[in-house]
Structures are given as structure tokens and as C-alpha cells.
Image (tube, helix red, strand yellow):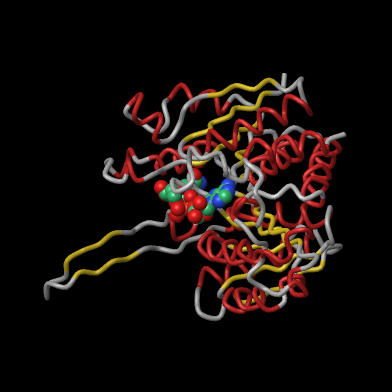
Length: 351
Ligand code: NAD
């Protein structure tokens, strides 16, 4: 039995997840959908953003789809119990080390980008970001007081061969199903971890992926190239810190946050974690105007990478494209469609 665990979360999360539920009912009625509270909603009900019960259900599902977490009402909750802490715990427990963030510019939205139409038309980048290592997790870290009374903050950027290899393998495998090109971005000119990153990616390529074109690029140059000529990239492989920044820059090139899905994958056969890249958008929550496409496209990625249904994913992707081409646009992308009207348009376009 294939099972999707929906964790709608907070703010606009429940609104966009409701549209995923309706699309799934129309497209894949055989996929069982379980649903649970999580994030701030769970903190209010159970005193924790992620209960052990929900974590166990996540680990035994085929895929987990999140809405969004957080909001000003939980800003003063203890750090370890904030809604965002539930998200980090979920990622850690599910051991999802490869974050896939497509940056894709739909033709109907090329004018919504902050870049010129001719720069973004046809944009289709897949950013593969290492998600569970690097400077966000490295030890030692902290803030200490020095003898002279100053404070000193420090973090550790650290990667092992195995951590680099497993995420690079995901990037090479993905490239084979796309345009067969990987650009690996690091700072090997100034960082030891960057030197190792480049060596390991080069060695893996020589060993198993010589059919894929591999280029190396310094991460600062990659940032510049993303806003100068983003269509040069196919798969962009990078670490946790640089991936955080480069994927946000690439996202902006595509128009709206409300359009962008993501996937986080671990070892083959383990459940994947899918989520829109946007947050809980407290400024529009409850108004029925949120764009549900990032959530719907996250479900599309789940169909492709966790449910093994590439054909169904293609069908859903085509329906989203048709809906946009047909003028279904929410407020963030220049239209007046409500959240449910956008869901209706996608369902109608499934044919
Ligand atoms: P946000 O992504 O929630 O909102 C940024 C802007 O984009 C807002 O103006 C919002 O209205 C708009 N927007 C976002 N999603 C949209 C959609 N689907 N349709 C239309 N417009 C959309 O970021 P923020 O305001 O910085 O953060 C709000 C809260 O969300 C914070 O508590 C933050 O911690 C949390 N957050 C959660 C996640 C997550 O769950 N993974 C990610 C980012 C932020």
C-alpha cells in the first residue's frame, strides 16, 4: 500500500494542502492519505511541534508532504520547541540528505520574474543541495566570551567523503534523466572542505559517471551566473550553506515563491520529504488567496521520486502548465484566482 502523510502545519499550509488533497483524489485515488497536525498547531495541542506518533507515521509512509510551519504567535516559544525545530527534527530523523530544488520558469510567468524575459525564458535548473551536513550541523559551534570581554561566535564547516559522495551520486543520476550536465559549486580556492568536495566529486565522476558532463564552478561565480545567464545550468550540485543561498537566488529568477516545490531524499526505498519552499505567509493566511501550486508541484515530485509514478507526475505537470497557459493565476503571479479556483483549474486541466 502506498501512503502519503500530509502535515499541513500552520498559516497557509492547511489551505494549500487542501488543494493537494483534492488533486490527489482526482489523480491517484488509490494512494492512501493520512493527515496529522505538526508545527505550531502541534505545539499548541501537545506542547511539541512534532510528536513521537507523527514521527513514527512519517517514517512508515511512502512519502511525507508538508505545508508550512511557523508564525509570529510562536516567536517566543523555547527554541527547541519552535515550529521550525519540528521541521529540522523531521529532516534529521528521516535522514534526507539530498535536497532537490527545481527552479523552473513557466512560459506564462516569464514576465513575473525580476529578470528580463529573454534571460529566464526556458529556465529549468535542478539544484541539488546537501541537507544534513556542513556548517549548519558541524561541531564545535557556539558563542564564547574571551578574556578581554569580547565575544567570539564560531561554526565548523565539515564534510566527509561519504557525505559528499552520496549527494553527488544523486546529482549525477538526476542529470542522466535530464540534459546530462552537472555543475558542482564550492569554494575550493579558500576552503579545505571545498578542496575535498571537488576531489570527491571528480573521483566519483571518473569512476561511475563519465557519460555525464561535469564542470566545477566557484560558488560566488555560480551566484553571479544565476542572475546573469541562468539557463546555462542543468543540475547544480552544492553543499548545505551555498545551496541555501543559491537556491533562493534561483527561485527569485522564476517569479514567485508560491510556485516552487522541493524534495528531500535519503537512501533508496526510504520515504522522501516534500514541501513548498515558501513559509506560512501569515500576512495572507486565512484569506483564501495563497497560491497552491508549490504544494501541488511538491506532490508531483513525490509521485516521481517516491511513488515511482513518473507518467502520472508528467500528467500533473502538464495540467499545471495548461492551467497557467489558460490564464489561471493567483494574486502573487498577477491574477485574481483564489486558492480553490487554482486547484479547480488544475483538476479541470487533468483532462
Ligand atoms: P513566507 O514564505 O511565509 O512569505 C514571504 C512572502 O511571500 C509573503 O509576502 C507571503 O505572502 C508570500 N507568499 C509565500 N507563499 C505564498 C503563496 N503560496 N502564495 C502567495 N504568496 C505567498 O516567508 P516569511 O514571511 O519570511 O515567513 C513566515 C513564517 O514562515 C515564519 O514563521 C517563518 O519562520 C516560516 N517559514 C517556514 C518555512 C517552512 O515551513 N519550510 C519556510 C520559510 C519560512
